[in-house]
Length: 414
Length: 225
Image (cartoon, rainbow over all chains, first blue to last red; front, side, top):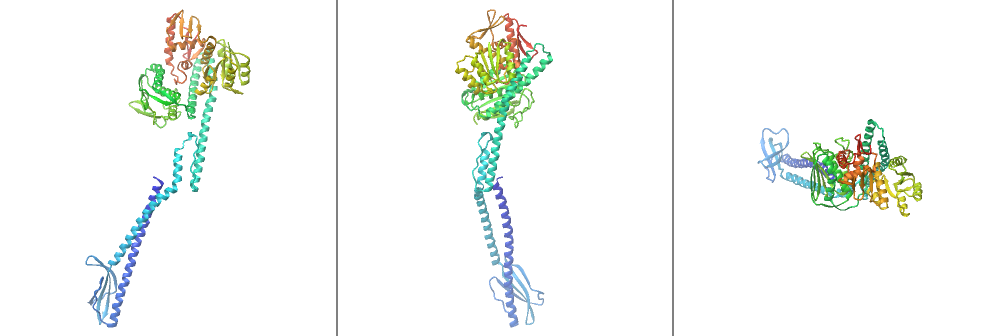
């Protein structure tokens, strides 16, 4: 939920609650006040009647006045006390009535003075309507003010957020956020700028380290390999020594290959393959397939090659490395007598292969050193290299598993 | 045949020296920029194995110096920096070949031999091992005046073996020579077996003794006994 929506929601709810409560309180207060006023009026009527009786010791015939009634009845059972009451007359009009007893010329009379409540109710309704309209108006204004002013106030925050979202640590461009007059935003921006520039620095340092480490490893690797090869030439080696030499050589080959892959990843990240030219992808795919043909035959793999004529503007070396890795991957993780489908279309290259009968973990698939099969011949960098090449070339790589086939799709234009 | 190894890692230059010495190369070693500069200005070598990163300067400077003095020494660059740009730059500067570390000694030896052959005989010559003759010009193998019908890869294999005769060559070194280093074969070198089997069969059929031996399943060796 957006901050503004959330704020508006809370704000509206509390405003409505407050207005509702105060509205109800106001209604009752008004009602009671008006009723009290009415009772005062009835008391004045009563006083007039009482004064008349005191002066003349007789009762007058009541005069008909609009919205007012006076009923006088002779009685033998006078009221014990005077009483205010709201009553309904003729089923539609509400009246306030004061009933009391009075003695005139030695006789008891019950007197009822009534006044219509219609005017009072009318006032209450009008006031209530006006209040309700005001509430609606206030709410409407609140929403409008919030959505315009608050949006404007939070603008620096959102533009910073937008820039931050587009920030990439490998772009080497430091994050520059717009200046703001609000202290909080200035503070936030300065922290963001500091953190991101630190991230860039760390990333660069890590990359540098990987590159230097890989390069520095090459010479010791060369020394070890040369020494092993010299030992191999020994005339009187025992079988045990040969086996040990072989294991050491194989381990060294793996190490050398891993180092080569790490170097390659670093070089791609450093954009050392930026040069692009128009290449005939069809030809390169066919050449690579021819190179792999022997290994495929050796593993008794069935190859289904289906290529269209495709021209692409990209780095040739990277494209060859990409194909190498894709083909190696499809070969290495394949079964004896397995199948590989290579399909080249204008927009995409698709490699499908048989192999381990379960989908790979899509989340970790392209991470470095991800090696689900724990296959000792795989260093877990092949897919990372594929991913990196695609990212550097502006391609998209997708993995899918269907019909017992592992499917890697490279989409050229995204 | 004199070869100069310009490499600051003594352990590595020792191995190279030792390996090449068996091929009748006379090796000298320079381990700094200055000693290398002195040696190349004083003597002529058939081939110079040149490391780029040297104490005291860059190997590429030495290469430029050679070209300035119109020296005809063959140059093979061995560098820890494996990249196409470095390679292109080195070759443009006048090097004959480029090999990135960590290399296989048989590969180095074969390339040094190839450079020397190109320099001495203009690339058109014949190398011999017993009754086996390889014509490098038209890339054919001849036994008893008869051309053996070899595929391109079988011919490459045979040349590689002869360039490293009497040496055990590991399967991975052979595979990399045949397929190039960009192919990630990851230990599956079984396809080599059929190539070598075919090569041996063809050689035997043409009346040439079987000189190629398997060594404990680790690699192969071409030798008389």
